[in-house]
Image (cartoon, rainbow, N blue to C red; front, top):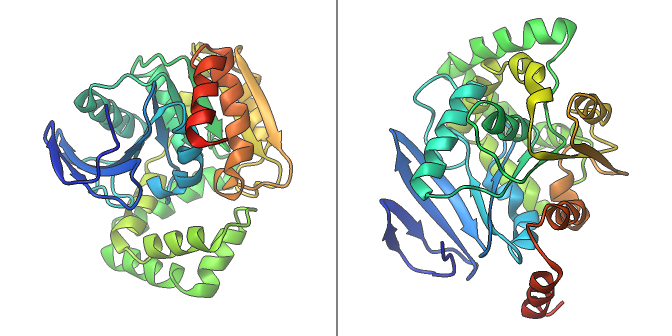
Length: 312
């Protein structure tokens, strides 16, 4: 799949839109009643990158451009998030996994590697465990893979479901979250220090009631217990990247997952929070590329050519 064109074209029923970068295009694609917005860049073995709950494909912009030297990067907005239309059914983990498989089928792509952040990591693992997708490797970045315990687990989903079912409450949440002080507190609660561009992107997202409603709806229908009970069956090699300063998903959760997956490794990044891939994309890229070399997805010659092409 070539991705360097900067013009409007029709490709397999999807509409490509011009983008400011000569190496990336944005595409809207309708698959099985679901309209997706996705970003595609680079050439090489395909890698699917899945953002977390409440984010969008734009959250990958730094890391995706680094990986695009070696891979074709596919970054969709999850249903209801960013510029993708809302899900036609309750956005449970299994439902989003099925819709993602439909998207991959439409693109005629079988990813060699899956990269997921937070809830996106849960979708990536579920694609392997439930949808029988078998990439060489899976990367979890601050993956939200452990079921909530105690009061939080019993209260959060019903509360989120009640808010998601009310359009007026979703609009109210969007209005509150989009104010400067509240947004800044939300971002600080991740343990990350993001740049102004990231802040601007999140500010634009939380101003959209539909995006906020989709975020809450996803939280309301999220059940990680079946996934957690199946982790020992995971076949692809698993890399668990954890930010030591993550205030949302503790780094110890990565160790909990590692204890259940035989072929897995944990890399803890000091000083980085939940949005580590946005704070320091190059630090996150390094262990991913090491994994790619270990699993035969890139070799020294291909990497050398990529460095020459980019002037590194």
